[in-house]
Length: 388
Image 1 (cartoon, rainbow, N blue to C red):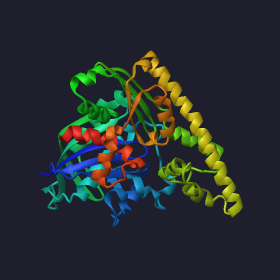
Image 2 (image 1 turned 60 degrees about the vertical axis):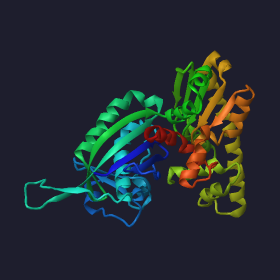
Image 3 (image 1 turned 180 degrees about the vertical axis):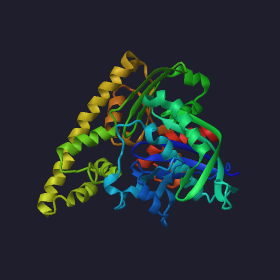
Image 4 (image 1 turned 30 degrees about the vertical axis):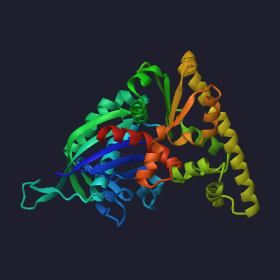
C-alpha cells in the first residue's frame, strides 16, 4: 500500500502542504486556496471532473451525501457568488474537509491506483475503492489548541469512513496522525542548530506572523515560559485598508487583494489592476492608486504599533532578557523594516526563519527571499523533524 508522508499547515489564507511518497527523498508542495462552497444535491448530481490539477478542481462528496467545492474551483461562475472564507471560524471547522481534499489531490498527483473491489450494496456491481496510508502532521495556531484533540478524532473518523474526491472513492489507513502548534518547526530547527548547553543558556523569543494569527513564544533554560496567540493578523490590516480606499473585497479571491496590498509599497501594479474596474479614467485611476498606496503605508505604521504593544504586554519584563528572536510567517516580511528597527534597537539578534527559507528555495525552486519561502518555513521545519 502506498504511503503518503505529509505536513499540512491549515492556514486560512492558504493551506500549505509538504509531502513525499513512500519515503522518497523528493519533496513536493501543494497549495489549497481557502474559499469553500457547500454543494447542493443538484451540484453533486451534475459535477464532473475537469482537465485541471486536482487541487484546482477540488470537490468532495462525503458518506452522508453532502459535498463541498474547495479552493480555486470556487472562482468559476457557478460558485463565485456562494463562496465563503470562514475567517471568523476556527480552522478546525472546515479543517477536516480541507485535509481530505489535500490528501485526495496528493493521491492523484502521485498516481496512486491501489484499490480493492467492494460489494457495497450486495448487488452484482462492484465499487473500486482506492486505498493508501498516511503519516501526517497538522499545524494549528496556539489559540485553537483546545480543539486539537476533537479535530484529530474527527479527521481519523473521516479517513476511516472514506470519501469521494473528484469522483474517486478513497479510504485511508492512518499510520500516524499528530497535531502540532504553529511555530514548532522553526523552534525545532533552532534547537538543532545549537548545542544543548547553548540552547539552554539562551533566552529565545519566537514570533510567527500569519494571515489570521500572530503567535509569540519565549523559551528560557530550554523551557517554554510564555506563549500567546493574537487574532490581530494581516487580515485585519487588509480590512482596515479596504474600509478607507476604493479597494473592494466583495468579489475578489482573497489572495488577490492580499497580494496587492502586500506589494503596494514597492509596486502598485496589482492595486491599479484591482481599481481599474471601479475607476477607468486614467487620471482618476492614478489618483485612487496614489491614495491607496499612502493609506497602506500609514495603516502599516499604525498596525505595527499595535503589534509592539502586544509584544510588550505578552513578554513583560522578560523582554529585557531576550538574546534572539526567531521570525517567520508570511506577513513578517511586510513588516521587515519595522521588525529590524524594533528588535535591533534592543540589541536582539534577529533570525529570519532560521535560514529555512533558503532550504525551501532550494528544494522547491522558489526565490529564497520571496514571501512564499517564509510562509513555508515553519511547515518545512516540521517536515524535517518528521522525516530526518
